[in-house]
Length: 464
Image 1 (cartoon, rainbow, N blue to C red):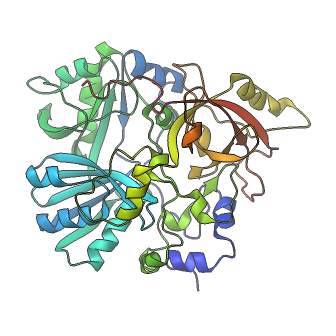
Image 2 (image 1 turned 45 degrees about the horizontal axis):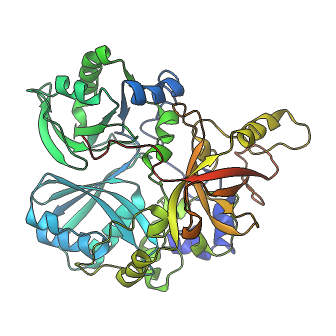
Image 3 (image 1 turned 120 degrees about the vertical axis):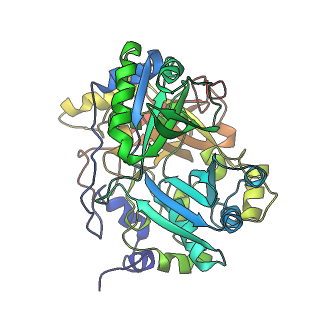
C-alpha cells in the first residue's frame, strides 16, 4: 500500500535524510496536479528587471506561487489558536482591529523553526494565511485537534487547478511611491512597514501592505482575483512614464539575499516524539512529505538541517507574554543564540573558476544557474560553511547573483563567533553522494566567502 501520510513516508525509508537528498526537485511519491500558472522566467531580461527595482520601479505578480489558507469563525478563538503556536505576541491585535498584518513564526517543542508566513486580519472573524504550506498545515492541525470554534480552509495551492482567491501585486523601487500616487484613487498618503490600509485602484477596492522584496521602498496591494487583469493593465498604463518593468521568476528568486529572508528551511517536524500524531495526520500530498534537500552538507541526523531563530535572524520576534509551543527552548535561544544570520559574499575568482569549469575536461564543478543559483535540484539548499581548519561552522542557504552590486551574495548562518563582518570563511560547493539527476555531473570544490551583515545593503524599509 502506498504511503498516505508523512509518517508512512518516514517509515518506508531506511535513511530519511538520504531519501530527501536523492530526490529531484519535482520527483515525489505522489503525482503533482497540473499547475494553474507557470511563473515566466523573464519578461525582459533578469538583469534589467533587477535594475528596475534599483533605478526606477518594478512590479512582481505574486498572485500565483504562494499557498493561501482562510481561517474563519470565532475571533477570540482564532487569536487564542494563533498565540498558542506563535513565538510572537498578538496583544496588539487584541487591542486593535482589522485590517492588520503580522509575520507568524512557529517552532517545534525544541525551539526549531517549523516555518513562517504572513497572517492578514481582513475583517471581523476572517484571517488569511499567505506563504508556504508548512505553517498553514501546523495551524490547521491544531485548529482541528483543539477546542477552537474556527475553520481552516486551504483555498489555493499553486500546484492545484484553481485560480487564486486574490491577486497580489508588489511594487518596489525609488519611483514606487510616485506611481502609487497616480494609481490610488484620490492619491496615496504613504504606508509604513507592515502597516495595512484600504483604498481603491481604478474603482476596485484593495488592501495594501507596507512591504518590500528588496532594499528599496515598496508596498503590495491585493484584492479579489476577478480584478487581476484589469488592475494590472491599469498599473502598466500609468507606470509607463516611470519605466515600470515586470519581474520574472529568475529575478524574483534573486531578491532573497537583498531582502535577507531565508525561504523554506526544512520544517522541524520529522523526529520529535510529541509530533508523532501530527506526522500521522499530515497527508502525503504536502510539501513536507515531498521535500528535496540539496547542497554539500551531509548528515544522517535530520535535526542538523533544522533552523534556529538565531539562524533565521528572528531573535527579535519572540514575546514571552503568552504560552506557546517551544517557549522554554525559544527563551534559551533568544538569551544566547548559537548562530547568526549573515550574508556571505562569494569570491569573484572562485565563481569564475566554477563557471568556466564546464570547458575543463577533467574537473567540472557544479554550475551556478545565474542569477537564481539554489533552485536547480532542491527545495532547500544546505551548503556547509567551514572555518580555516575545515570545521563545520554554518550553512550557506541561498546564493543569488545581484547585477546591481556586480557580485554574488548568499544568505546563510554561522556560529556567532564567526559572524563579525569581514570574517573569511569557506563554502563547500557541490552535492556529494546523491542520486539526483537534474544537476550537472560535477566534482566538489570550495568557495572563499566574506561574512557581511544581513541585509548587507542599506534598506529604506522603515522609511516608507
